[in-house]
Length: 320
Image 1: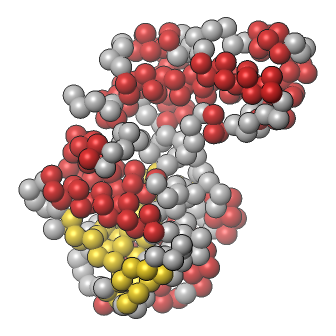
Image 2: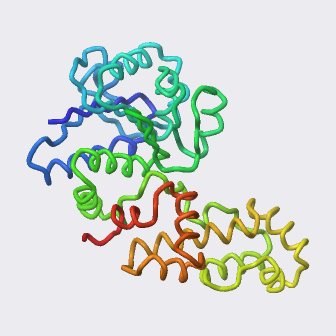
Image 3: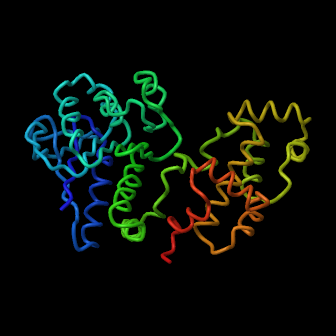
């Protein structure tokens, strides 16, 4: 069995533990050997209170964990940044990381990895609300707030809460292949196993909702009609504004320029088409408004750090 040591502390996020634990448990039912054994650990044995009032039992004290550890998984939670001063916790994480096959964190568990020196010189992610502070506290880490998970060598970090499930699925895929990870995702009634490069938000969530109703309607129009002419002059005419005024107001109220919003929306449409259809890439490019396979490839690599063909093969919802 692959031994997964899940590190907890008072105030941790319950789903950061329960989500990956259920992924590993489901995977163990689908593979002959080796499966996974999740071991909940903390500085001391006994009850550990999650944020929200649920209590779990840590059956193992971290100081008593001996080799071998396959996966060291540090969960997160609102209290994680407050625990960086717990020297026993941080030192035990550092000790176990030296011999574990791989190290992973969910959400703000990245703070504890960083405090243990495990993110120095590495790319990492965390919950988008915590990313700026993580970067400020640990400037030797390259913090990227966008992806849902990042692998840098043997260190994996993920975004917040449910992204821990995506991280665990990626670890299963590394061990047993993407087909098994998709089966686990379907068994857990997840839409699909998302790639790490996918952003923490869908396109509508990645731009603020405008205050003005005409701009909110325009956002909806863009998302529903990606193959239309969505140039700034055309969009400005739809709102009855001059091009300059439209660009300024749209950017001010959404946080992104009209051109960037259109590109994101088209990229998101292309992603959904790759997930749910068997259309060839040239048709996906046309229907998403990206025009050519070359543009589709460039935009997809920029937004999700994976080629569109690879994305379809690895993450299409329907089993091939």
